[in-house]
Image (cartoon, rainbow, N blue to C red):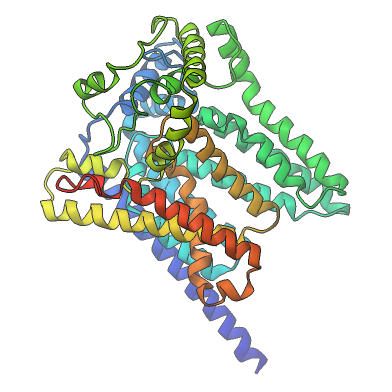
Length: 465
């Protein structure tokens, strides 16, 4: 009987592994094949900026401003490395497709540590088949790699929190250090990550207030982040003549979101897409201050102008908060825009429409079920961390300008909890406390409201409710 049980367990583990490997293979093929088929995929806005910045890096100019913006250096540097080795900066797309397989591995093991292997399989398949995640792996955007780095940071964080005392202390400190390093790399990839560090620190000592190791880990975590960001911060501060951690884009974002015109989003049906439409949209607002060739001065005066506008228009500012969140939670993504522009030449129109419909349904599933699952199952430090990361990004967007792009790297975290909800749907309410049930209803209703706000915008014949 014991041998039969052991064989059954081994068989189940093999089947689980086979399912995950199949998802990885299919997910990789769905990403790499379009890259090979559409080699002349045109760059769009920020994609073109990444290429220009990488060329300047190769020319020996180091990190430079672009169009008045000083961007975080991580992604442009990686693009320049690919251009240096292959002569083709867009070759980073292949790296992103490969990195996506690594993300799936992380998703499976992290989900298994959070819940169980069945949840891991569901989360991996969600990621492998997500049209939005597939699209961004094929594009010159930092979302795919940034999302993977963020997930890896959560992985090391989760391992650090399992350390209690004794011989494990050194191992726990190493895991905390690696978590801090990963947070630092995230900061170098996206300026919005600059202020995530306190969330990691608080989550690390959550319900471990009396643990000496937990406090040591928080200090080591901060040290790891500073160690990673410090060298570039020193370099950039000296080069641009003003203190800088990773980027200087706040002023420009305030110009886009805190102005007389409505906050700008570049998604299909939800914002100006052409240069002419952009100029027409922004004509009614205040002009950008300072010259583009003076990026630090421009950022400072744009930030001040944005704050002054908020002080002069407090009611409008508050009324726009739901709009910005809805722009971020729009179930469409840049994929809809890409298909509507006809950039995937050669496929029938009905295939475009099918992809758009599947993409919307997939994103709604992740956002709705992931939010409810996070509320129901987001326990202890890891639940606080994932909730904090999501709420922090939503808060940042609610103050500036909304864009679906900013949501993309956060979705893998929700996939864990969406998978958890789907696997345990029968016992969700039975095992949850009353406060969690109430919270799940409230947050679930809010997410449904925000995701449906711009639901119609992906279809030409139906742009609004």
